[in-house]
Length: 289
Ligand code: FAD
Image (cartoon, rainbow, N blue to C red):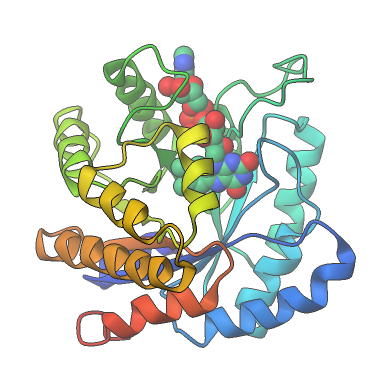
């Protein structure tokens, strides 16, 4: 099913993200991971593409496993920073063959060793969106950044660029993680004012260990509210308490979003079905499959 239709027909959707294994030898473990995640009955499962802008050999396989083996709609991520048009067209062909009809079109981070952009290749995700649209019948999503993308000159300029990406053919947007819902509400207001009217899916990251938090701060510069910092400081030396608190914090964020009319939520699961499952359980009377 196309995600655009799903978002129209359901008032509340909870979806999950998985990342594929780096090595083929880890594929067996990935099968089990997909199975465990599918049992939670998310509205769809997204599968990331590479990391830090790199390419991925297993995204299509894993999306196929999600959708054609486990019966859950798949959203395949696709980045273009490190890929030429031939590679992109080859992946689009594979997705078509596997009847994967949803793509999250991304530029990807620019690898440090890359002479970017490759000659006559993609510079921004909007160019990829346009090309996927021309390729054929895919439902295309894009990324957005409630706190602004780190490379953007200003939040205002970032929203202008986002508008262009939407006009190129995005049918929905998924946000970067955020830990203070007011940041999202503020962003939604600004996006709407700019005339961006497609559904925005709120990306929620349950933080369950201290290293994850350090990585988040160093990579994205995401604001960590005082309430959240207090939890981390209090339970830093007690992994199971921190995990429980991280699940509770994410649950609370999601309940507040839904209560305030943001019905579509995507959980960055970090390949942890137990964490996603605990959140789903907390929402069992709110998100009815
Ligand atoms: P773009 O939309 O192209 O924006 C990149 C920057 O360029 C922004 O600062 C924007 O303001 C600016 N810009 C855009 N258009 C113009 C223009 N016309 N003129 C001037 N400036 C412009 N990375 C991965 O490697 N694999 C993944 O699977 C992956 N999944 C992600 C999923 C989500 C939901 C999110 C939020 C991010 C994901 N990322 C992933 C990270 C993402 O690839 C990086 O954040 C990347 O740096 C930007 O990608 P983008 O598609 O948002 O780029």
